[in-house]
Length: 80
Image (cartoon, rainbow, N blue to C red; front, side, top):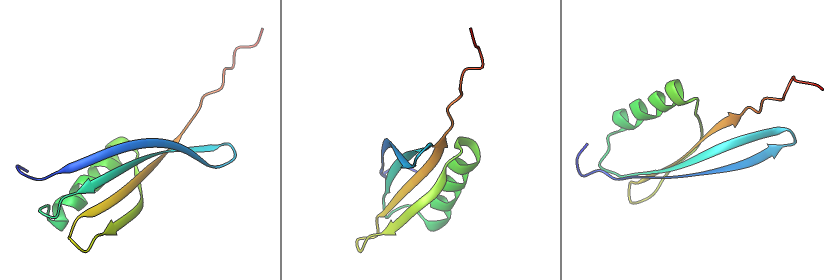
């Protein structure tokens, strides 16, 4: 979509001991339609493993979205 703005940032945080999540913050412009935002979020959920954590609609029409996904750490099975 030409002329629309999407800002992203990412961070990692542990909510519970042993469970770590990666968060991504998006700021979506008011020019994006509701259906296009839904389509974009569904696409990120299906292909990136993200889930919706929070969505806030500002009085000026911008949307602030927080997505999260679980970080799965693999432990070594090799013992000496």
